[in-house]
Image 1: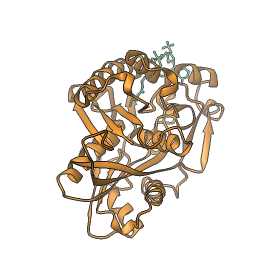
Image 2: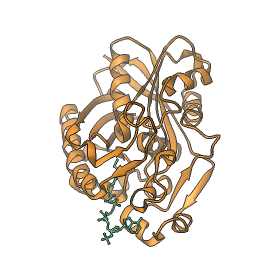
Image 3: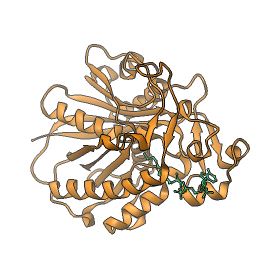
Image 4: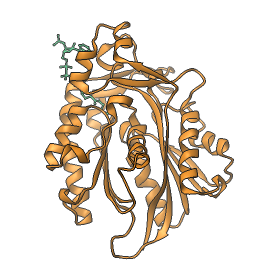
Length: 322
Ligand SMILES: CC(C)(COP(=O)(O)OP(=O)(O)OC[C@H]1O[C@@H](n2cnc3c(N)ncnc32)[C@H](O)[C@@H]1OP(=O)(O)O)[C@@H](O)C(=O)NCCC(=O)NCCS
């Protein structure tokens, strides 16, 4: 059976790290409040010369290098972002040009913080159906550009960054096959107004700023993530006890703790980078995955579960054998 196997990971962060103390000089907040409510201590903020495409390109280069491929052999690029360089063309095509790839498929996916899961689902389907052989799946964001820096309830929560994986279509046997084993995705547009940006090309003609009812998002996130994790585990015939590593969307340490508790998963099996990166939206899952692959925690053969929830609402989970 053809499976989409993760053969390389990479990530990139803007040069500048910003501490809670630095934010407390701009808005009425404190290091104590942010750490206690979110687990966040630091985030990286992009300089004007650092863009969604430049961070994505850096992350992609590292993932391609880890895979040991020539960039030109990539025939599919799916880039998840809510902060594209421009309204069009797709940021994926800018990355494609930066990498020196030509003629393959390249497009963006918009599912906000679940964007990377949606991108994995789409790329996996295209690889298994034979439309491409080697895919670059990227999550890249510069949320600092759409934050209201006067709003303490949102500006302390987000950061910029990018993560990437290379997926290769490989024939795998039935015994413990490597690759993406299942992905489940959901959306419920009835909750559009709990997390949104108050602008856009077709409405205001402006980029807009992020708006969120944090407490309500929190409540939905814990319920939706537990449900989709149950679905994807059932589909693959696994139980939570089989999971070697959970790589969750890094929104808030309390959401991660609550999700792990619902699964009865020990905290040591949860990859947690939110403290240093904050919420990097579509970049957060591949960023956390790359950190844990590079520090040697996640190894070939491990059963890894990816999950995310974001604006829309959208949410999803994947089970992957590394
Ligand atoms: C945003 C979040 C951290 C707020 O935590 P909370 O415990 O729900 O806190 P509340 O929003 O109820 O606010 C509690 C108080 O803290 C205040 N507060 C909010 N932000 C603050 C900040 N940065 N510093 C200090 N005080 C702050 C509020 O004004 C409120 O004060 P009040 O009681 O006087 O009105 C939390 O709801 C959350 O993480 N939600 C999920 C958000 C998320 O992950 N979204 C992305 C999903 S993709």
